[in-house]
Image (cartoon, rainbow over all chains, first blue to last red; front, side, top):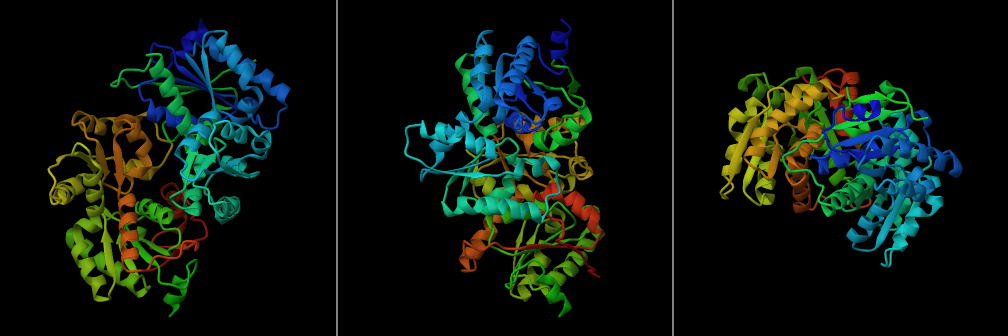
Amino acid sequence: MNQAKQTSAGLGTGRPIGLIDSGVGGLTVLHECLISLPGEDFLYLGDSGHFPYGTKSREELRQRTADVTRYMLDRGVSLLVVACNSATAAAADSITELAAGEGVDTVTVIGPEAEIAASISDSGRIGVLATPATVSSGAYRKALEGLGRPLEVTEVEAPDLASIIQRGQPFDDEVLDTVRGYCRPLREARVDTLILGCTHYPLVAPMLQRLLGRDVRLVSAGHAIAAVVQRTLAGSGNLAPGDREGGYHFLVTGEVDSFVELGTRFLQLPLVGRVERVDVP
Amino acid sequence: MNQAKQTSAGLGTGRPIGLIDSGVGGLTVLHECLISLPGEDFLYLGDSGHFPYGTKSREELRQRTADVTRYMLDRGVSLLVVACNSATAAAADSITELAAGEGVDTVTVIGPEAEIAASISDSGRIGVLATPATVSSGAYRKALEGLGRPLEVTEVEAPDLASIIQRGQPFDDEVLDTVRGYCRPLREARVDTLILGCTHYPLVAPMLQRLLGRDVRLVSAGHAIAAVVQRTLAGSGNLAPGDREGGYHFLVTGEVDSFVELGTRFLQLPLVGRVERVDVP
């Protein structure tokens, strides 16, 4: 009861779309959703008390994401977006099954970006920039190769990029050198489309665009997921009317202040006064 | 001699493209130039010691921009970009004449954005969001009406927006309310294209895009000027080779530290270690 009441803070009377992530990275996904779907209500859970997910075992992650998923289902979300690569790689199937049991659809990262990248690439030469864990999971390669189009996929591991971005601006020439190094094999492979395979990476999109050239198309999970969510809502006749302005609200399992401070750069929209500390046991 | 030596810091051996502005706003123009033209060298003069230009008289501005222009010509710029609305409105003709005397072309704001907006608008309903001074100068309306296409122009004055942005993030709901108010007449006029008529405004582009809807095209001076500079260089056969990575460097007449701190949000690329304090008497 108390939970249901809390959920409605900053939101309309309908059921919000839920997003889950291990911290602030998924806010780049919410950013695109808020711009593409201004009429909808969103509820974002940043499990920052358990950040990072990337270093947890598959079993730990399946357990933790099950807890988080159940919590969001109790909060009454109408659709669940897994805005986190690690959670998707380890537990997409179990999260999807759990949500389906309550009649709630799930959208995860990886598949949507792969689909968009393959559909907009002219040459079929697609790059993927991702964490070592994501690259070695083979998830993007599998998703791309499953699309039935001959593609030349170049994957580049960026071991330091997410933590550099998390640490914050101002970016200096050392960061530029790091990103320049990641871009070299992508330039050599003459990719015309690059998947930003980590939700942190949109924050260095200008740097990537400068180093790769404006003609290279950058595809983020945010763009792709916003499109899937829109399609899903439209398909079920649940899109909000065009003149409605939706609300958005944040739940965090860690510190509120650091979430606001870090998150503003990722969301690029007001966060202040919308963040609530919660316990998800 | 000493000046010529300083100019080359962080730049190649060729003559850089110069940009002038009253402070950090023009960095959104440089941002687009750096992404569209990664092979060129740029030299940016932020006249922050004389900020703001907006409150100076026409005569004061013509005098000051003449000094700044002469300084940049002495620094050997190959092309001069006036990345400032106030300077353009008050002194575009005198700056252009001064530079032409040294055989240097000038590109100013306002005209390029107007041209792009008119060419991409389907409905011909174009919005302009600008400072009261810019709106009352009639510069955008004149530029749009001179393009020989019937257009319905809706101008909205945003008295507080540039200073809110200059003050910095995190944006809160008060900022959102302010921007929402500016968007109301633009929504009512059903504009399909909006000119961001101040170089500060790209920092609230996500907010504008959410409030106006993703279908409304936002046109910034940065986009437009990068396109004009590219066309100008290509026309004279001076485009850098595709594999070259150009340099960029900053000169400021005010404090270095505050320029770096403020400027990072506007440039979204590394500034640290590239900023030099200069006197432009």
